[in-house]
Image (cartoon, rainbow, N blue to C red; front, side):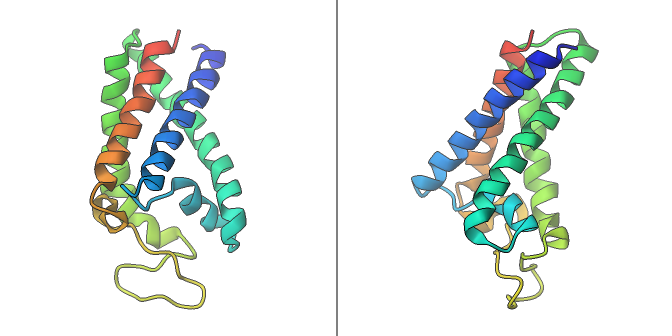
Length: 156
């Protein structure tokens, strides 16, 4: 396993994924901001949440890169299409499992069953993160496919 390759391409893939997601948010295709969601888990400051969440997201990108690389090493090959397959699996898991569970462990997120309170004001994403816009699943899928393609295509 090439640690340097995993760190480098995990960083590049995460920057690309984050750029695609942020660009889609700026264009009004989605309201979801992964850095904001992650940041508000650890800080009540909405301003600071973006900075903290971006750091958490970068570390998560590296951790996921090691999972992808472990898969490449187990299969003894790394190709862009294998990375895209990993991105499809990754995005599917995030959208169908992680997003609906997020209110259960996010201290500032409203759940599907209880309304906002003084401490819980972040809207829950819902299944496929559809509460953040109808294009959110597609944007999330494309960004994760790009992440996987970078890892699979460039990992040594």
